[in-house]
Length: 258
Image 1: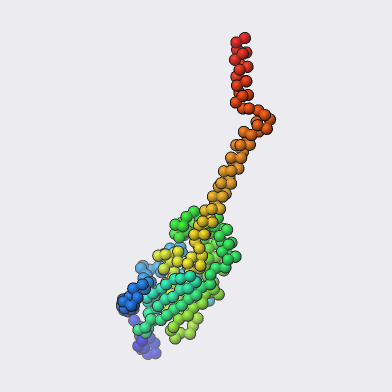
Image 2: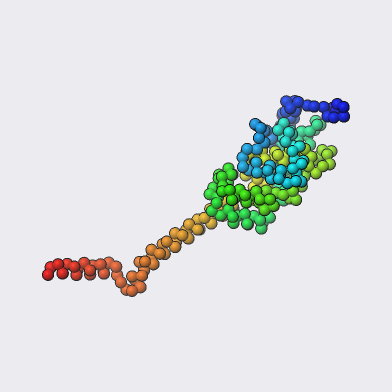
């Protein structure tokens, strides 16, 4: 990087994007599986899961003053590759040098106790996988999922970060760009969030639907028992509904003949 008057030389946005695109093409020749973050439009994230991820990070004072450094980086296409696995995020970010920086982020899985609480609250409120991934659920669930330290999203204490650059800050702009990149990636595939947090989403859907079915079946059984009880009460007194009805009809017939 060249400097002018002690400050880094200004590089136009178009040039930054061009550099990033060339770096992506070069990497792709070596590894066709790379997955760059491409931001289209003004917003980094547009869906409920993507925006909630970014909002969660920005809500913590530990991050709010530093994470903003990564916005321009991710917008300019500097995140050349980003992969999300169970409890980890690995990425390559184009910085001021020709060789991209390696970023590794580890996130602790959600605690079993907290997960059980969330799972219980979801009963009867989630009807399909599609609704969940599209963020189409009651506000009560939205508040539950995004609750600080009590929801699905990680806290700073659950996140460890490392970058190969020379910036010794806990969160350099390359790490910040990757964290924003995760929000953008969740727009494309929200299921990756559950993979990252080591959550079996099928269990959540199955449990929510199963419990709702049990409640509905329970109501149905109560109604059925009431119908049976009304019928069985005649049996308790030894009354045959059909026979008794015939006797009444016979008496009326005899009386009319007189």
